[in-house]
Image 1 (cartoon, rainbow, N blue to C red):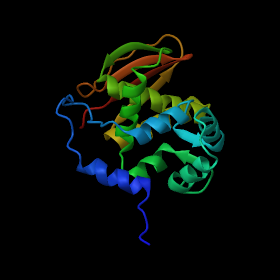
Image 2: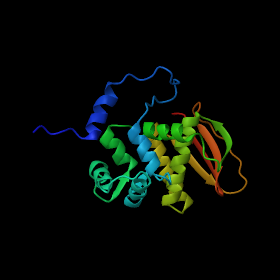
Image 3: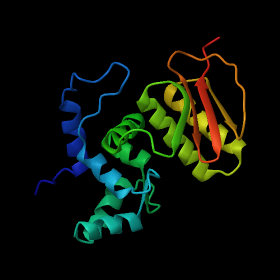
Image 4: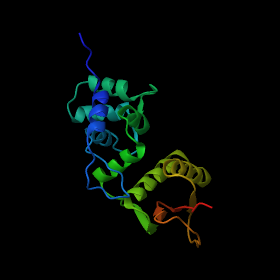
Length: 202
């Protein structure tokens, strides 16, 4: 009896055969409708970019799915078998880029979170959203501002190319700096102000 292909393989095949819509802006990634990402976003209610067994179980109960739903998702997407499905693992299985997946989430959920106060911006909104998400993840992982800023910089350098500068301040500040066009974003989140920009190449 011929084995049936798994859902992820079917998705990758059909996804890469589709032509991208011609309506995307030049500076914005093209993102197609994606039922798998829709499900990931719905399950990952806290926006942590990870799905736990508890979150899978909550989603299963809300939708009256069978218990096998949890096992299927873990088998398909939990590549390191640690009981948690990360967005990185999810994208690897489906052949997606992390940046595009995050952009898709922004399109589904809307713009910047209400708790973000923009101080100054010379940057496309989709990049602002990715940076805010990066900041929130780093702030959740670390307490010390030095560790937070280093983590943010490493992620931005890897995702958008070097050289990103990240300054975290609390209270009054003054700044004089140069940045690449459309690559500067200052904002307040919680009790911290984040000054983030990309330095022009030497």
